[in-house]
Length: 292
Image (tube, rainbow, N blue to C red; front, side, top):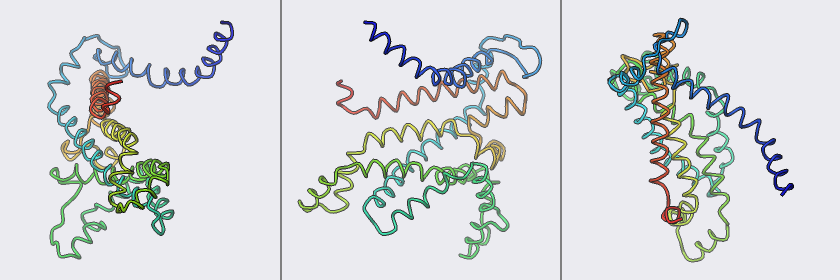
């Protein structure tokens, strides 16, 4: 009995620093965010308790729902892009020539900061002398679009660098999972006459499906709270056309100095993210896991 208690104390001592960091950096700020959402506060002066007024106002705010829709569109595009990442990982894992070099190239965006990536793509999208419009004009397009100034296309223009930024991360995850598949299974399938496409779709993909489910959660949840690259490239403009929940929250709190309302938006973002995470986990749970 004493030995068991001793082991529990040892486990607690090892995990306590991590638990303390999680509490200080994550749990406490989340609680404070919910608390500040109950206040009318400019971030400097005295706070005035107003109950759920900020939360009610947020639910009636058309800009909040528009930014929420944009975040969900980004999440949808991110989830769909996982199929492309998986296809690239399957090609890299099939022992093609130059796979090691390609794997390193795909990791380059991960090494750059979001600000650097944003500045790079701002120059690419430049309507006057940007690389993209120069290519379009070379192909005969007389009036190429102003990618970051057109409200109809700016959101989708921003999705491209975001998807490019995280390509290496997900490709690396899939590549590592594919490399853990026993080679004997692949060789047996080849002996039975399976084509490379059949091996990929009927052996490799099913065996790493649990990893794929995890990446779906990571990409969708990450997209819902995405902020930095969008804010640097457009600040949510033009006229809110590229606003997402996180950037809208930031503007309210640090530009309009409405910390109470901004905190309420942030807490609603947390609730929406938690709900989406639970729903995704339920939808992607296998039959065996449900029975268990």
